[in-house]
Image (cartoon, rainbow, N blue to C red; front, side, top):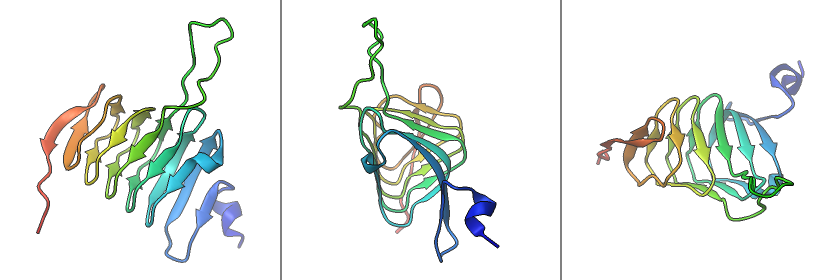
Length: 143
């Protein structure tokens, strides 16, 4: 059986049985993934910046990481080409339906709860949620 035909063209499959299914809107060289990331049905918009995923990042279903931004004041509605990078630290879990807007940094060991819209930086070791996302609680690391 042709596994790529079964799970889709945008899927990469490894011997570890992790799979990544995503779409990159923009330059694919602007997406940088660390080690052991798991991505499920995600849109990476790299039109206006780079997207950096640290190690052990988990992205659930229907997540959008959007660097794209338009200059809505100009008649041509041009896309801004730079300056809207998204940086995600190590060991971050992004739950289903999250939207992350360009220019945001998410600190390591954080959780973004389902349906959240992240418009500002998120510190490390916190759980955030809502629209716009706000800190729900601090996460105590196990020793």
